[in-house]
Amino acid sequence: MRSRAERVQLVERLRVLCFKQGHSVKNASQIIGVDERTGYRYAREIEGGERKPNRYAELRPLILAHLSRYPTSWFSRSELIRVLPTPGLGSESLTATLRRMKDDGEVRSRRTLREDQHVAPQWVTRWSLAREDQ
Image (cartoon, rainbow, N blue to C red):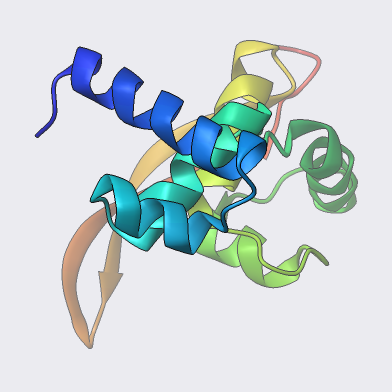
């Protein structure tokens, strides 16, 4: 693993090669001795892009709409992924959004033991609309 100082130097070298000398990210990555994927990560960092975009604003209304239709039901993360009309929705984005909504008092969660005849029992977090009377 590289030290922070080494990484900063590599990012600066990539910036010079790509944005001042006109090299492609792939070519510049080879020149500085990093993997092409690492070069693209460095380029994204230089341009100020987020590695994982925050999807809270997009997901919150969809989650609230679905949970509002079934106010007394509890849904697992995988069940919500299946029903929300969002292509490319990953469990990390959904979980982060649900946790933030829980912190804001919009949803509630509980851990339950899922018992399926085909799979060993396992703990699952289920989510529901927060009730007014709580």
